[in-house]
Length: 299
Length: 271
Ligand SMILES: Nc1ncnc2c1ncn2[C@@H]1O[C@H](COP(=O)(O)OP(=O)(O)OP(=O)(O)O)[C@@H](O)[C@H]1O
Ligand SMILES: [Mg+2]
Image (tube, rainbow over all chains, first blue to last red; front, top):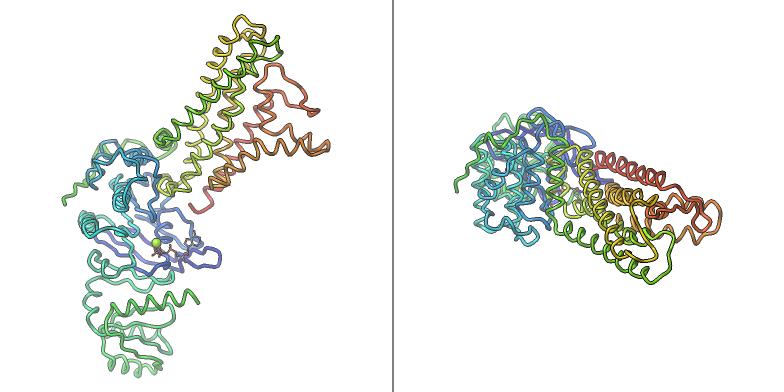
């Protein structure tokens, strides 16, 4: 169980993560979705205790990362851009990490077998293909048999077979009751792998929703809404059975409700509608959202 | 695809917490699993034995000189650089490759990571340094046998030179590691290391003034020049020098301060 609360991280003037809160529950795959530069990797680095937040906190099973007694046995991470020295063999890399975690040599052989790198274990990592490097990163994450697993863009650069393999691995890990968080900027990929989605844009939470809700809505119409008082409108819409995604630029994406119903609800509240635009599907809605977030960031 | 990821008994050791002992084992494996380790040891041996042979052999045809051990151990002046570069790269390469992120994820107290690295660099440097200084001594003694200049462990100061030269090598390695822990980048760390070891000496001697000359005795290069000699000159080009033992303590202090600052910064900064 990962709890992220009010997490904020600035790099100079850039606010990479902005007051972000969400939970990652065990026993399911949680997809961490957002466009490039939305703060996914920064958030994952903060969960792993590598980046220090300006404010807010992260706990893993109630503890801060740096207070974990055996970090490798509790949390496994595949970090962005292969955090591995290319001059070592895959085996030496894993063995040195295993020693850090008080893990046996036989477990190194086991994870190498598991990711299918046994035959190239003595080769230097610098000679590995992108897919092999990604598998080695996953082997490192699984080394301590951790209950919490974070994979940052695990399918980045993989071929279809590698993507399938990673997807089924994530599903198996979740089925064993582990907490699995995987990031991606590809919505379609996430929809096939994850059970739950955490959508972010510009470092802020846009929505937490289940993939089932997402799929149920993705073929239905959705609307972009702007109104005088969104805080008032959102609960009313949700009571009426709508799903809402709040965008960074004070817009709202509303799914699962007709334009007429949205308009009438706003009227009941004496809440002026400024915009009610048809977005046709959630996929489009996400694209819209994504563009909005990117635009907003660039300005 | 079947995955067997059950928790196994033999995966865990009965130990309370990941600490220095685990970090030390991991860093030991890391040190020797890079080709650069073997090459560095080879380069160190080559430079110390090779230069010993060249410089000592030349003494055979000369009249007796005052301090032949200095000529025997002349390779240590260069060996120091190899050790320092090794110390720098042992950490800076982790930053340039991103490996440090895997390391700190495994050990979220970076001070312990740096401590383990320091013990490995210091230990390897000390062992190599002592083996090299004593074996070079025997090589030099063999070459000089029956000639005007003689060395023997029974002569005053020789044993001290041999022991302290090995310690000096370890300390210089730690200075390299300490610089890298503050600066992180390989290129920047290496240029700072060489400036401190070499360029500064030249610059300070080129500049006039009593204060500048007085400062130059604090430079590692001038301190090691007293360590590598059995008869200590109290002055070098008009500059007063520290005694070898005091000198050794001063450079050890440099290493400790650099590592302490670096360890603190590694803990404070993002990884
Ligand atoms: N070390 C850093 N120094 C300065 N800015 C940074 C640093 N790391 C990240 N950023 C900035 O923070 C923002 C978020 O970056 P981050 O890498 O977390 O995004 P991301 O969601 O992982 O993107 P991607 O999908 O491209 O991997 C970006 O604007 C990025 O430029
Ligand atoms: Mg990223």
